[in-house]
Amino acid sequence: LSADKDGDAHYDVISAFQKSIRGSDTDAALHYLARLIEAGDLPIIARRLMITAYEDIGLANMPAVQRAVTAVQTAERVGFPEARIPLADAVIELCLSPKSNSGINAIDEALAQVRQGGFGDVPAHLKDAHYKGAAKLGHGLDYDYPHDYPQDWVAQQYLPDRIKDAQYYQPKNNGRFEASLGRQYWQLRKAQQHTLRGKYHPSK
Image 1 (cartoon, helix red, strand yellow):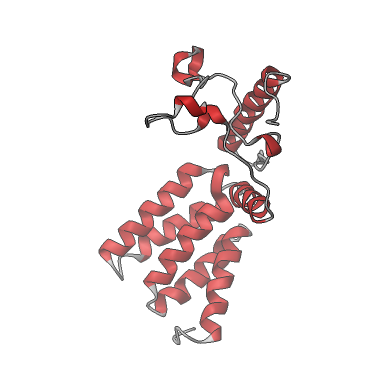
Image 2: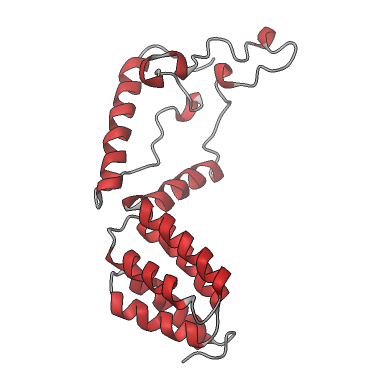
């Protein structure tokens, strides 16, 4: 076991717990969950389970992620020994769920670009126009309100000129949920690029 919550062995169990869920080994994940329960470390179980749900299952099965969060909240409310029940249910479902890390990959790609200076001015039509003099600066002009268009969508440039073709999200097809999101993503991206080709020109 890992009764010493500050010892290296305890952190090894925490690491093995997440990696077992990521690797879809239900029995291993339950084993490490049991060791963490015996150590009485409900806060770290709750934190690690929610992180694992969003990081490793993510968009492949967001309903399962949401149920895991609910299970954690229930466990925190009832405490041990009953907390073991919602925790076990969540662990089993996450282990057997399709997996996707496209969400964390996408935001890390965006962060890396921003940290390397990959950003630019917000397009004028997206700038705040709720103040006197904004129109004289060209702020908010020519903004198309999506809800005024069929299906509540209209093609317009949202990214800064210098990175207008940036792509961070790479959809995966490991579950019906993200497969559906992926189809929508590629459809919208293709329609936007086709419509905007030649419509916007980089600022001088």
